[in-house]
View 1 (cartoon, rainbow, N blue to C red):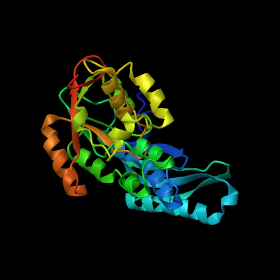
View 2: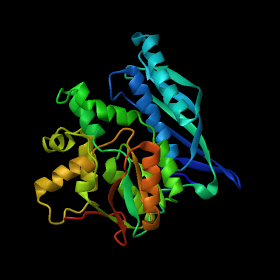
View 3: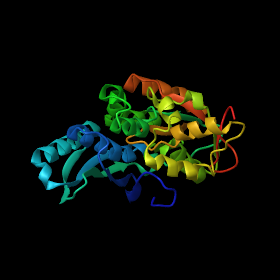
View 4: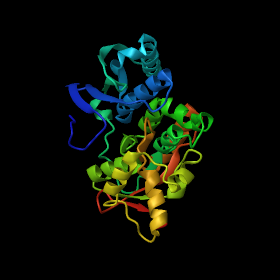
Length: 311
């Protein structure tokens, strides 16, 4: 039912009239020093692809690369973190594969299921839809700053906790609101993943930059060019579809540093009809105790283009 054609979050294979399989795989190098937290973050990130489709994860397989000289305790902590995240999602880890590698890497291959009529894809956004983001932005900037000592572990803690948090409840809320489209915000940043949604849907978007939820310090760090290396390649690509408008060069560059920041285990980006917006907000708050950020609106024309409301 779904492969590479719209750069969606997972592959979908129909099994029957009422059941489809949703499959994904994701792994990466450590973004934190603690092995258990790394395991939880990597697993939450992989599981997010399934939640973004409106599906339920059932079974996962470990994908682990680790230098054997680090010892079995490090491997055990990483795998325990992944297993705990999977259990919280309602899935089990049923096996996997490990290799000896100089650079640690961990993630999951995940199998889930969904009713074919209830799949939420990234190509269904419609003009007039309200755009919501369910987690703050800036994990790439914060982890880059942590590595060079520009922020402390305590200052980075909110971002770390957010990366370990599942998108399970956000997925439930979007299903309750009959969301038109959804994707999770990860390695291509908000700009890249929103562009994919817009291009696939044949629409554009207007974003209120001041409504974006940011971790504390992210704006100042972006202005100081404390950005992960990948952000700059995302910015180069995004210049083709994020309009500068009347913004001066510095303001445009600093905003691009934020919306092109590659996220790890970021939130869901959800397009909901104006009629479903109140339902989504209410369900999300009841399930999480948090309020989703209303960041903009879907508009007609110029497929894939992103504009700032004040530009």
